[in-house]
Image (cartoon, rainbow, N blue to C red; front, side, top):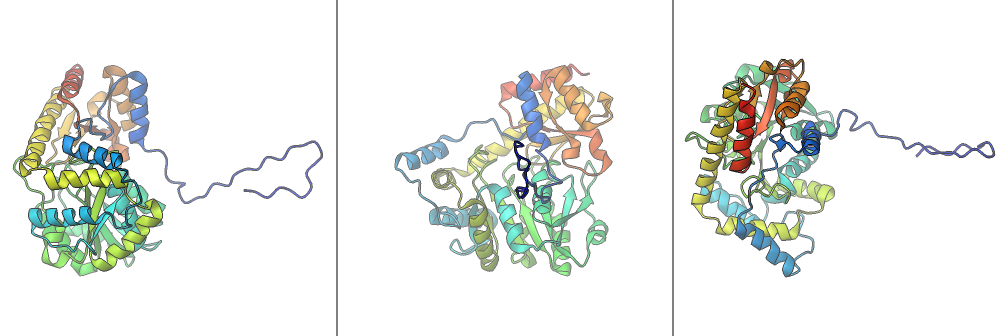
Amino acid sequence: MHKKPAHCPRGRRYTAKMRIGSRLAELAISDIRAMSLACQAVGGINLGQGVCDLPTPPLVAQGATLAIAENKAIYAPPAGLEALRAAVAQKIARSYGQNYDPASEVVITSGATGGFAAAVLALCEPGDEVILFEPYYGYHLNTLLALGVKPVLVPLSPPDWQITGEALVRAITSRTRGIVVCTPSNPAGKVMSQADLALLASFCDAHDLIAFTDEIYEHIVFDGKRHLPLQQLPQMRDRCVTLTGLSKTFSITGWRIGYLTTTAEAASRIAIAHDLLYVCATTPLQLGSLAGMIETPRPYYDELSAMYQRKRDILCSALEDAGLRPYWPAGAYYVLADVRKLGCATSRQAAMKLLDEVGIAAISGTSFYQDPVGETMLRFCFAKPDDVLNDAAARLRRLA
């Protein structure tokens, strides 16, 4: 607060003016949340925010309900409940053949985004640079900015979003500390191939970089593709902070339960940073997530991918019929589409036109791009019940 003047004229009331810090000057409420509010105001269909309006598996919900009923509501340890960390380690070993010590190399976090914030706080210094592929997930960009770390963008182009060694080398400076790898990616739906991962591993090894790998959509891949973790490559286990969680897998985006794996030294520092930022992930919801991880059968994950592939096909086919060119994703549950047909000067105008004309909310491409190409795109989310998605598809076809 500003200090009250020593001599304030009698009869005049002094009003203090709160001083606002500059650290977040470049940030604003995300366009995703703003469009969700606009959609709610007109009773539209929200294909903007990835809220995942699908039911939570009963055993997950029941696990949390039972924990609350049994008054298991105290703080969890900074690194998370021991049983949940053990379940995470077992899942990774079973799925990917990687062994992590649950006592020292696994941290339960407040969502994957909370894990990312804690990891950057623990492992980077203000003024460091971190490479970020464009189109990017906005929380990755904003977290780096908020913590004083400079994002250096490497643009990828549709439809295949190809990574090249030349583009990576151009992004390197003496201050480069790490790289963010999101696979399957939000918003493009790119699933990193073995060749992509080999290129990234060689690059990180050559330049001594940390890889912050966001794999929250690991179980949502299409067309026979497989998710491949970067940490599997021999030289990358000790360079990776692998971030994922259960929000998308179990449709519990509001629970904010994530986890990460990394080296014991890095994990101990990240747990301290996470404790500072969030104290702990919510205890009853950790227990509900534990029930899901232990009891969910393998076919559930295969059915999850098949379900989302079907939903992808519904939405992308409708976009094509409407003359809005979708870049069909290979994973996750979003699609970027070229919407120049709408005849708008900016993507924000295109988003509002779509909401006004057919009652569908999408997110402006500039939420994921600094490059001007973002003005030609909108992002749509297809994590919706079939009746809602089919209604949205019918509305989109009115644009044809």
